[in-house]
Image (cartoon, rainbow, N blue to C red; front, side, top):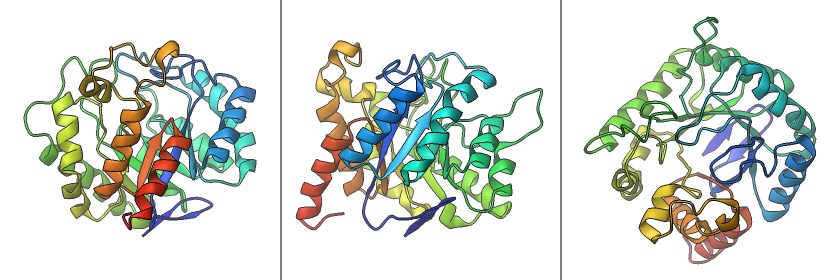
Length: 289
C-alpha cells in the first residue's frame, strides 16, 4: 500500500514513524522546546538520525483546553521552519486545521496535511474550505482525524458509550467527501483521534478494535504518544508530561505504538522516535509488521 504525497510515494508495507516537531510554546508535552527556527530544525535533524520516516510540523497546540492561535502567528512559526526542512529530503507533514495555512504550506511544497478537524473547520470571515484546498492540489497527502467537540472543551464533555461505530462512520464519510471531489484514495490516511474527546476506556477500546477501522480500506495513523490515557493506566501522575517528567510516559507510548502496529496501523506519530524505531525492529524480527 502506498501513501501518495506531494513529493513522495510512501511505502506503507512497513510501519512508518512520524516524528513530532512542535514549533509552539505550549504543546502539552514539549511546548517551548523547539519554538524557534534553529532549535526546531535541530530537532528535525535529530529525529531523522533517530530513524523518523516522516516529520510532522505543528505551529498551534491542540492539547485539551488549548486556545486557538491567530493565523498570522501560526504562519510565522511554521513557514521559516518549513522552508529549511524541505531541504532535508524527507516527507513533511503539517499539523494544521486552518485552510489558509494549508494553502500556504502546500504552495511552499509541503507533502501532507494532517488535520484534527478532518478539513471541516472554516473561518467565518473566509469562505475557503480545507477540503477544497486539498482537492485543488494535484498530489498532497492528507490525514483525516476524528475529534469529538473542539480542543477547548473536548475532554470536559467526551463521547458516551461505544465510540467505534461513530468514529468509523465519521472517518468514512470524511474520506468519501474527498473522493467525491476527485482526491485519489492513495492520498488519504485516517486517524481515530486518540484522546480527542474520548475517555480512557474509549481510547483503549479503539486500540483493541482498531482492526475494524481497516475495513474502510484506508491506512491508519495512530497517535498515542504521551497521551494522558497512557499515564492513567500506568499509574503516572497527571503532570507527568511536565519538563521534569517528560519521559515518564515514554515506555507506555512505545508499548501503545507497537500494539497499534500489530493491529494494523501503517503510521505511528511519536515524540520518542529512537525508542519506537528500536521497538519496531524487535517486532519485525519475529515476522510481524
